[in-house]
Amino acid sequence: MSEQPMRPATPMLRQIAEHHSPIQRFMGVSKKWKGVALLLLADSGLANLAIAYVVIDGRLDGQWYDIRDLGNVTEHLRAWMQDEGFHPAVSYLTTALLGALGILSVVGGWLLIGSWVERRVLAKFQIRQGPNRTGPFGLLQPIADAVKLMQKEVVIPRVADKFLYYAPPVIIFIPAVLGWGPVPWAGKMSFLDLNVGVLYTIAISSLGVLGVFLAGWSSNNHYSLLGAMRTVAMMVSYEIPISLALLAVVLLTGSMQLSTIVAWQANYNAWLIFLLPFGAFTFLFASTAEINRTPNDIGEAESEIVAGFYTEYSGMKAGLFMGVELGNAILVGAMMSTFFLGGYTMFGLETWIPGYLILAAKIGAVYFLFVWLRGTLPRFRLDQLMGYAWKFLIPLSVAQVLLVAIEASIFARWETAALFPLAAFGLLNLGLTIEMVRRWARALGYAPEVAQQQPVMATAIGGLKAAQKMRGG
Image (cartoon, rainbow, N blue to C red):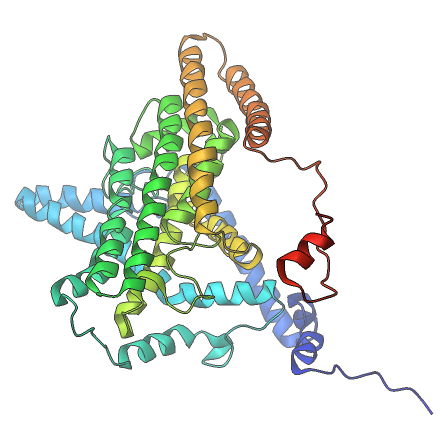
């Protein structure tokens, strides 16, 4: 009697066994469709060669149809409107509306598809399928969720202040859109290229605190108020290390203008994440607390009975709070890419590939890191999170600012090729970061070499006396 292969016992194991990789799926396709795919690939290669020829020839430079920088379109449109005699206010408002429409398209598009992306990626980490029922590959699931939220009954607490109750979902959404203003997507693609862009970024990020506090206080619910207060304490605390990390960036680059910071990294071919590793880590970790992402999502927790500061919100009002978290995640990805990953530049690749696509790829990489953290790390307690900010990040960030101030002064006076001082600063900062973190952690009581007491299973019921006897006390 021949042995038959054992069938997986559970539906999930059967799905895993039946799941094929993209290469296996391609090999299972008929020869006709393989030929079509190879033909499309060849056509794409020829098109890329044609584009490369035009780019090298210089025919695209500065033209309105130069898609490497969509700012060329608005620039030519503004010049045409001036030549035609339009009032300056009309040309200004027209180009401003085009830029605002572009920002809203990015944010709105991500709010529409972001929840599907995050759930699918988390499912891959946890060996699940994720949303796959509503529409092809589950793509219509976000629309179904939005329709469900809009149809839910909006329950307003009887004794709540209605105006202040309605305001927070709108207030908390405003910084998620305004924060995109100074972000440069290409050389001419910046909606608000301020010379104090860093200050603008810090100021806009602090507006969310007002919405969080009003949401908890106006609900007239003690649980909501407590959730709002601990969230406000966390957000205010972590604004300090964010500011110190960006201060180090400003000291080294000599500018608070985001486009200048990106140009500095492109000019020296040096990303600031390699020159300021502790500053990059501080900004990234503190930003997860600012936008309420795992492992710092203290504002509300899935494992708790209540939902933190917006416990009393239902329907689309609660949906706005959840959607803003997705929007803030890609905004932080854009800021992280701009300050520490070279922005829209990529060691000269931006002359071939549109800069906004390079920036989008970097934003996607940072967002993937956020999802990775969510699928890996548990949630910190509030006391752990606050202690980490005040006892660890802030003191070391102050020391980093002092060190970078000295390095910036040396760099401005060192008359030699920039490669040598920047390489020296990068190696020095990496070594000092490792040493400072190790020594400061030990000063705070962290001792990894001390053997931790292993848990002992109870063998009798006896309360405190039995526990002391088991420990040998």
